[in-house]
Each structure stands twice: as C-alpha cells, then as structure tokens.
Length: 412
Image 1 (cartoon, rainbow, N blue to C red):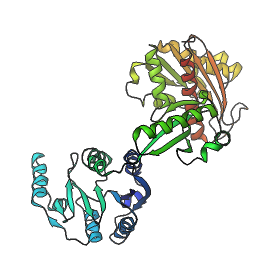
Image 2 (image 1 turned 180 degrees about the vertical axis):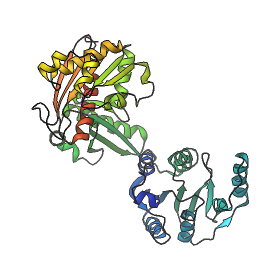
Image 3 (image 1 turned 120 degrees about the horizontal axis):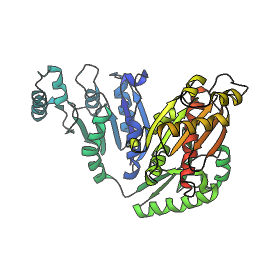
Image 4 (image 1 turned 90 degrees about the horizontal axis):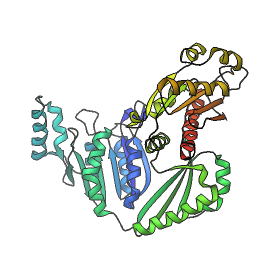
C-alpha cells in the first residue's frame, strides 16, 4: 500500500513551529508494510488544501493528515475532505453530546464554534481524542483510507496509538518492512561510502548512509513476507557491514543515545560523574541530564569559562599561566578539580577554541578532553565547523571517549 502524509497549518509554512508529526508517522509505517512515498505540507487555505488532498487521493491508498481540526475559522480540514469526496457535513448528535460533556466536566461554557468539531460526513467515522476536544476522522471511500488527526503532537500520538494503528494493522498487507540503524563515529562519510560500496548497491536489504549530529548512521532496511524473514535479512547484512567497517566504530543501535549509553555504563559499574567545561559552556552537562534518571550518577557540572573561574573552581593559577587555558594540562586540571570538588568517581574536563577566532595561537576547533579517574586519559581533537558545531562536536567527542573508557573494565 502507498501512503502520503499531509501536515496542515500555515504556521508550519511560516517556520513558527517545527513539524514533528510527519517524522513520527513516517517511522510508524514501515512495520506495517506500508510504503510512504510522499510527505506534503500545506497551509490553512481552502483552495490549496483540497488540491493537495486530491493529488494524494489520486496516487495513494492511505492518506494521513495532521492539523486543522480545531474550532476556529482557520481550521478547514473537515471542510476540505468533504469537498474532496463530494459529501455534506452534518452535526452528529453523539459527537455533540461528547463535546458538550467535555466542557461541562471542566466547568466551562462551550463556545458555539466548538460544534464544528462534532460534524461528520457519511463516509467518515469519528476517532476519539483522549487529550483534546477535536475528534479525528477515519474516511473510507473508493478503496482508499483517509485519516485526519489533530495537530498537537500529544493529541495526535495518542489517537494514532489507540485508534488508528489497530485499524491499519488489520488492513496491512503481508509485506513487512524492518529496519536497523547502526550509529558510528570516527570514520568520514567518504571512507564509509568506499568500504560499503557493494552493500550500498544492493536492493534488498537496502543500506543508507546518513550524517547526523552524533556521527554517521547506517540504516539497513529489508522487506519480506514475514517478520522473521525480514529480521534475518537485516541480521545478515548487519554482520557484513560490521565486518566492512569494524565494530570499534559502532557505538550504538536504533534509538540508543550516547548520553543514555554512558549513563547505563556508569550505573552498571556504580560510578559517579562530574564535569568542568570551558569551550562547551555547559553543553556536556546539559546533554548528560537530558537522560531521565541521570541524577543517580551525575553529581554536577561547572562552567569555568574565564581563567578566573577556573582558578576559583580549583585549578592552579600558575598552571594556567604556564600552559595557557587551552592545553592538555588545563583540561586535565579541570577534570581533576571537578572530580575532587564534587567527590565523584570520574571527572571530565573540556577546554578548547570554539571560534570564531583563535586563542593562544590555537586554531578554531582545537579541543582537549581529559578524563580523571582510576586511569587518567587525555584526548586531542581538531573539530571542523562554526562555533555552535564545534561546541556540539566536542560534547559528542567527550561522551564517546567516556563511553570507550568505561567499556574497558580493567580501567574502571
């Protein structure tokens, strides 16, 4: 089955909000064996929206829309769908009762405009919205399925999981699509492409190379008649890919994250962590604490941006004067100082030049990362990019070096 996702809302076209619904829905379709061919974005316009819907209706079996189901004049998705299938909207007594009851429970007088959320066309059935006031529509006509869901992500996801997904699972064909993503660091895209040239040309499973902020991702995708066969195809290709590039460059799989992996390693070894950052300005600590439960192993972080701040945090002033603020000696001193200050098992120190100008004759992108612990470690990186990119890449590098250090059980 061929599918298209249509994100509806002028605010998307103006860049006021980022569309997270389409990527989420796109990730949900492969396990159902549904091929996503197009993703479209259109504003709240009663000329252009029906045109986009009509184009999708002519070329797809399944159409998923998000947005435009609210009570305002700008919310025109229902009207556009009614125009598409040539049917008249009528107030549904059951839906009207549910909407009125919802407002009554909240102790709010219902605006009359909310009654537009209680209409249906003959080909539509209502989809319950457990998070908001806007019901969705499941429309079946001429062998096609059109699903209209609300725009707020928390409303859309709940409706998808509770209402839409079970019905699509019943209608999905025998074909199963399964993917696995290998996440790598340390090999350039060109080198990766050269080593994997043969596999990149294969039809099933396919192999894609994607540059991401946390390295290069390799996605293996297989299509088969059964789940077991699809998994077997991916497993064989994964083994071949690992042999081609080397396991040392692969740090994670699928939805795994570097801070999440580091956190699990720290917990498994009953170790605590503290950080002191200069050039990254607290980004490392922020990234670590993005993982739920990080308080069990992360003691805290210090942003010692200026030389005076480094000295106040426990770094020897004479060391700073002798070696400079951007040096391996200073990175090590930062790691040692924060480890002592926070009484942590491991300390990580980062210093470098984020840009746009050089510091102490060190070029932009120079970064030193130190790990203080049972076995001290020092790393030098020359990172490309602008100021924001250097800060992010230094954070990723620090997490990866810490991951590798923790994997060496002899060291920790």
